[in-house]
Image 1 (tube, rainbow, N blue to C red):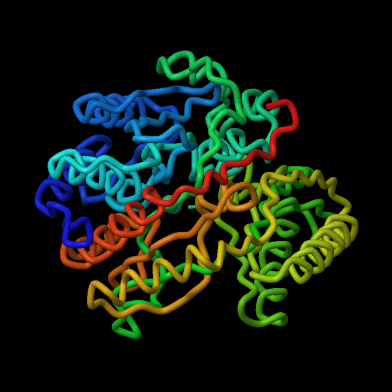
Image 2: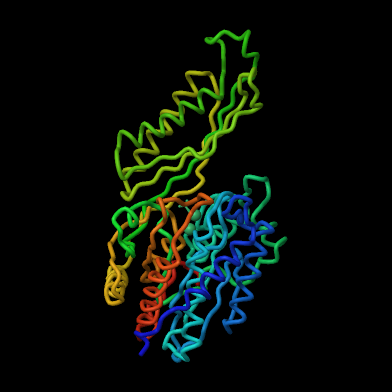
Length: 422
Ligand code: GLV
Ligand code: MN
Ligand code: MN
């Protein structure tokens, strides 16, 4: 009977569009940076929905929020989760789909009067994007003890504000300790954020793992001087050093070839005037690869090259690690379950790695974890035009429902934690 259960697409889309009104940008998309006023408003709305659905809500010390639907047995919860923060030019679906799909699964089960053996949990995790406060996956990383709570509370963001103070300000500094969430398994549905499913006309991605992520910040210090009077060989131009580092990041990715990628997402010069040699320059580099060792070599090559460029120009250089996450492999049995459930429902499926970071990767070392991907139109994400058609969402969330149900009826209680003290 449970195999015939289906989600209510209109209800789910209604919630996606309602959340998309919070922090809406004039040309579409959203800006709901972590711990901003808009993030607070989104959190309040989603927490309200959790309450309406009868979930028991917990908030932990890094502001993660999760709601639990009771199970028949004394078992750890099957968790569904993702994030509701966005980048500054975000789409409506990144993260939001994973959280609201979880609520849709709960509401479908509530309506059908299905009681599962395991409790079912739905969570949204603080600052998955890391766009305001690096690193990304901050909340899930703290909850799963891959990141230190104290270090993360002390992080200062791009606007000079601090995580702990902003959590207090928006009223989401909870009291539940890290390491208390031990799911029996973790599931996340997400838009692919890349071109593969659309290009291959496949409805569902059964995600096999997530590539490793290295984020670094370089700050170059030089001497600002007159652009017309200073001979080229006498300059200490922080700007040219920064652009050489940026070009080197691209050259490294080109030399290594796929799957290595490199992105310079921020580059700023100060004072940033047409006729002034930059006194300082700051840039970020995002390096990713599915291999564990290759990006470490890439990171070393970049750091050595950066030192060389700075020395040649007589400039100072400071380098800061913003994020380091090793690649993860998802649980093969969970990946199989997603692929099998997809086929049972009559949809097409491919197994694929994720290029983007996700909260699921922080759970993967501690409990069986996997993800469902649905297509992204034109492969666009971190872009206000991010789009996935409602019918594509229906397919993915129906698969999620079946997988969550199957796992929630299993008797094993495999929740573990990486946290030594918990
Ligand atoms: C998170 O969205 C990331 O992959 O940067
Ligand atoms: Mn996301
Ligand atoms: Mn994102």
